[in-house]
Image 1 (cartoon, rainbow, N blue to C red):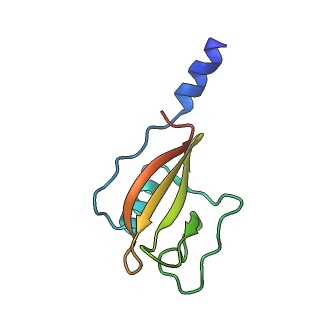
Image 2 (cartoon, rainbow, N blue to C red; image 1 turned 90 degrees about the vertical axis):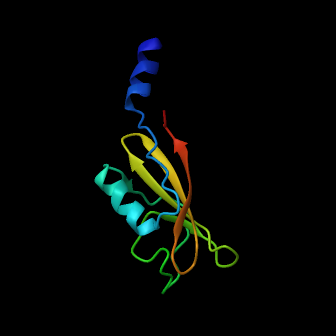
Length: 104
């Protein structure tokens, strides 16, 4: 059992650093360069036509239609899934990052 736990821990990825006040488009490029892959999960919302926050971003899980224009994007690297939260309708800015599955 101990050998299994060690192999699972070895496969886990560390969370990328959370940028302060960074445009999601720029952060997205950074994640791709670090080997993270945009990931579409079952049950994800569909991007509304013309919504600049999620158009062309298959990793979009959900985007609010009102309020602070929050969105949630899913990324995968090895066995690790992370969520990147954004705020802003005209320019989506990274507002949070958390582990969804398999993080150190």
